Length: 417
Ligand code: UD1
Image 1 (spheres, rainbow, N blue to C red):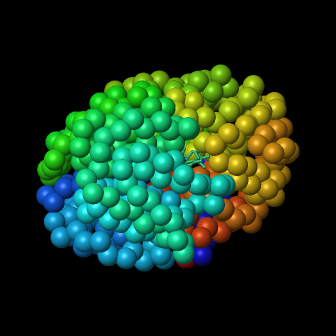
Image 2: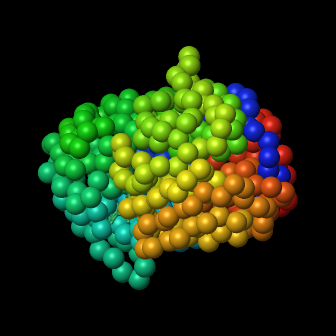
């Protein structure tokens, strides 16, 4: 268990470069096994989730190497070997391996995926999509088995635009025979990044970023070099941190379009957000003004991953704010921890009503999930006195050296392992 000790009160100021996107890197690492050639990925954040994914790839016979933001994967000797349940159950993204592995080797066995405890996280849509491509999927004794002859292109209709299911079907169908059309596909920017990566490998994927993705299967994919997109959730977290602390942060490489839903809410509350060169400048001079409802939805709606940092901001806002969590129900558990710091939050099922208080007070709090953990660190920045956050290494799943970025921005933060 790690303890992060934050002394609040300093406005965050300075320039930082936004890390590469966790949610683009994880599916792209899984997609690397679609070719026998070497893949080189640049702009990779150093995250424990990526370390875990790389360990799984090595268990499948891949060669992997990670140095200074570059990851190389070579799946020439890919073999269907049992993956350690201890790894698959640590990571929701382990499910990404199912589609590509079935496409390359015609067989795949996987323990049930884990990940942050943020609510029910079924995999029915992944399975439905793979079955449509001709994969036989069976589940027994806590394991999922997939087998097929050659995958066949198909019309896949997703009942919900699941990010992971869209990606799994895209990866598997890249090597299928004929055309696949994914209807009601997720539109997140990370899906576009996966499309670009698959096309860089010689794939024929079009339509990512819209609700209909078309994949023309090819016989073989080849190696490539690819740069991972900037992380829009890390971008949003730092934007909220700047507004919360009445700071002034320049986010190099941030893509404004990817955070439009958040930008709109922050501007409504009085923040100054400007595109500037290759990034965004986020400034705030006064107390954030709450107003209306923030409702999480699939992209381009307000992202569920930024709901927790937004709850911290609303806790000290001028007025009453409301947050409706439509994607992962357990994310509102953060309210209990913020209340220990003096926040005034009432939770009714998926709705949180947050009456802004003048100041939060430092307290001993505990992280339940990755984004909730970051939200507690932000709360510490805005609180009087010292906040001690016990973190079961959840924050490092998604934020690359969070504490170092905070020091660089002038925050007073210490870590005790
Ligand atoms: C991805 C992101 C995660 C983000 C989420 C929503 C990665 C690695 N993680 O997670 O950070 O919070 O998108 O933007 O990219 N669902 C089903 N059946 C399925 C799959 C999903 O019912 O087979 C439901 C989930 O329970 C959830 C909703 O669909 O309520 C959204 O899940 P999904 O879009 O699949 O999220 P993930 O891919 O797990």
